[in-house]
Length: 508
Image (cartoon, rainbow, N blue to C red; front, side, top):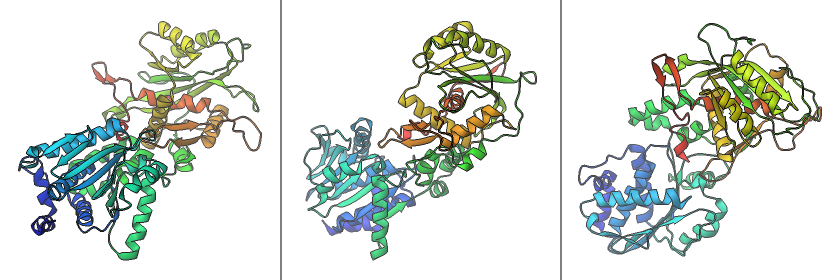
């Protein structure tokens, strides 16, 4: 390494930012500079450090990666060296990382004439290379050696076993610097493991290895980012798992009760239960979870009271919510508020009978919307209601992805104060609270962040021995689908349909 090149970097990391924009420059922020400087110094001094860089979403993590990679290609293009970069998936994450580096190289006045691509996943400048690999569990990893730098992007989504077996050995004989990039998730991830190791090493020699930044730090330098995060907090709640992890770098448990005491408290409103539509202009919606029982079962009682305890079968549950459209005008929320005003549940009821009852309830409540489970046996019931109530019915089909999205959306409505239960409680609501207390949630490993939630399979009440169900809970959660529908603030003002997890869905 030439001394002039080293001094060029040591004087100021911001010289690196001149690579982009053909001299116009990209000003790296202070928190980016600190992490970038530590990486470059570790590489150049052959320290072999293991560094962790945790930055909030949309705060410049990927831009910093590309700038560091391009700078190392520049510094080592004469004497050579390899960087190996691992992403959780090839499509789209590895492809995105390659495009980002390519943009930086193409915008640099000198490197745009020097770089070339090899084998579809290798970028070369002179004798230096960046090799992009997928960390997908099923990926066949080619043999590679990281002589300069071994990177793991979105390390919270790369399996620790996959990393230890296929990738860690790539730096074993070279004293290559290792960098684990990502955002917080649970304490069981590869990123969390490496963060603990980095902090332990810091205590031993005093050299900083962990660079953990929160939304407040980014917002202090970028006012527009502070406003963006403020909006996310208002819409989803500060304690929403995705907000905590993606913006505030806070770990959450991978598996736990879905409704801790503080979340249950947020759900409690002070409005009364209703038997019929209230004031003129009030907007109501019905949320229906359809039982998966036998279509030919005997006709059961139609009531809004709980059925027998013990080994009861799945129930068809209907939650009636009054939709408060005033919060659509809130510049931060821009979504309705849902106040539960009534519940119904039926066990062992033919769908032909349910059709008549649900249609009558929709007319009784003058429902503006009916969201109904159209999965499996519910498809026929939903179809008949669609024909009878044109423009009112929204079928919802449960898949692992759609139920996960529904769960995240329901938590967002709760945490932002937009889902409220009536008071005082009746028998059905007490059963709803019971379902909430027993409900569990877990998030699958990997970039999809698929949430599994609901009653534990085969679970039983420890006191009564009754089978645990989640019919009322799932019915209530369908309010998250209402967030995706267009709502009018007035006869001439209609709010376009929007994704309630916009800004969070693409973080996976």
